Length: 269
Image (cartoon, rainbow, N blue to C red):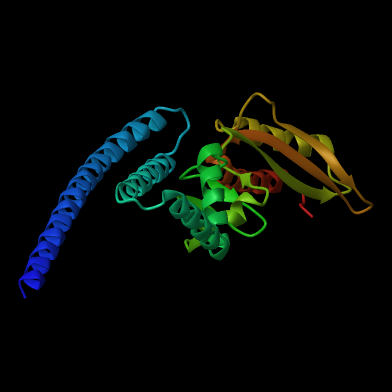
C-alpha cells in the first residue's frame, strides 16, 4: 500500500512538473504570438500607408489603383505575420505556404473571369485610355465615363441610360475616345443640282463656316467636290473645332447653310 501511494505521489508530481513546463513554454509562445500579431498588425498598417503615399506621388496613378496596391500590400504583410506566428508553435510553415499556394491557384481558376476584370481594371487605371467625364465608343459599348473601378466601368449612354461594362470587355477591344483630343475635325456634305453655280455655292458654304468664331483658322476650313453624277454634285465641307463645341457647331452650321443656300436660289438635292 505504501509503495502504491508513493508511486501515485511521484506520478502526480511528475505530471504537475510536466504541466508546469508546458504551461511556461506555451505561455511564452502565446505571449510572443500576441506580441507578433499586435506588432505585425501595426507594422502592416504603417507600411501600407507609406506604400499608398509613395504610389500616390507617381504621376498618372489613379486613386483607385493606389488604394488597391495599399490593400494588397497590407494583406500580404498580414499573411506573412500569421505564418510567422504559427511557426512560434512549431507548425511547419512550409506546408502552410504550399497549402496557401494551392488554395490561391484553386481560387484563381474558380474566379478566372473576375481576376481578368481586375487585371484589366489595373491596366485601364494605369494606362488611362479614358478618364471620368470622357465619351468613349467601342464595338460593344458607347457612353460617358462615370467611374472606373477594379471590376467594371460605369458609363452613361447618350440617351441617359446607366451602363455597367466589365473591364475585360473594354481592355480587349479598340477604344475610340471622343473627348481626349482638344480639337476635332467635322465633315458636312451638301449635294446640289448639276445646274448650280459650284463656285458660288462653295464660297457661300466657306463664308458661313469661317464666319463662325468656334471654327479653327488652323487648319483652315475647306470646301471641295467629293462626288459627281449626272444629276448632282456633292460638296464636302471640312473644318476643325474644339472638341466640346463639335456637336453644337455642326447643328448651327447646318441651319445657316440651308438658309443661305435657299436665299441664293441654290437647290439642295
